[in-house]
Length: 337
Image (cartoon, rainbow, N blue to C red; front, side, top):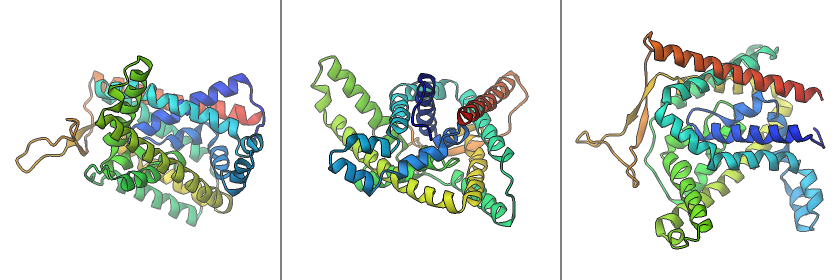
């Protein structure tokens, strides 16, 4: 692990954080894939698992510099800076692109998943009965999750905390999309749209001197929900990192093959040619949540027709593959230093 990083490395680390944050926001896409392909997944997991009792003792004793060095603080702070910026900037752009250019956005992500599978498989030489079994198990879980039906929205704070723990799997387990899991739990709009936008709008109002809007009951409720969700996410992130660090050290080949299976299984979720199925009432009317947003039921996938739009989508799939290959090249270059 590097103790010092050049300005270029720091900038690229922030960019990788932007990529992870944006990927975590999109249902079906895993931020962990970005970490895997860019070559910093194991450092990410290792750094997170250093947040333990020893690190807590450094904090209690006021040894902040020792704490920062012990947890690889420069690496984590730059990465999380990119993620935070992403949630309040790139993720809003991504929301716009998905609404207006849905097919092409999904095509890019589909290409990235294909590129990720190539990246993981090309250097993996330990195929045997246990790793093949874990690959098939990972694929089965990934495909199974993609065909589950979502639950109803639930803003109970204990459930929101649980959502935070579960949704962070997208950062620690490449191929399992935390945002898609939130759709299945019924809380995607609540936790990744309404609460984030409420905090963003409140920050804008405060900066413009409008303090009345900030204390509006709905805003306050959404910010409290976001705070509990964030606490759950941090809890899950640290907990999963300890578990993953343990299994990566002792069962690395089996773990990597299962993660590869998760990624292969996620192809069904990010298949570009699909239409969104919304929940209907018994009378056949569309169901909406509290903010007049249609409630997603699942996706109906279909094969594309041979037309210009399909060829453009195929081009964006190639763009996604090339993006992953570039990340792989840069990650390999960085590891050589």
